[in-house]
Length: 97
Image (tube, rainbow, N blue to C red; front, side, top):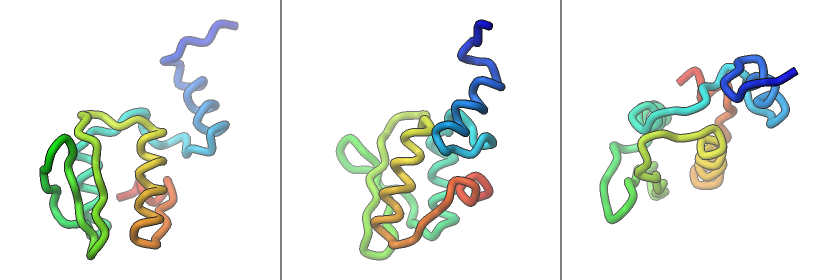
């Protein structure tokens, strides 16, 4: 059986294999990321150089300036947030924000 990359069943299986919630979107846009971070308590984004920055107390999170974020980028972002603010945000909670 041939599976196309856009096949929903294939993507769901891949997400489960990668320990990613099957309900999380394949790509998230930058404005959605900013809204979710604001809900977590981050300050509005600041520009500087090639990246944007968002602050949470004394912690500064660097955001790539790309328009879309892939699942691996979101997972990396959540790991950085966990280290920076000592708060774990599970993917299902992230999706609900």
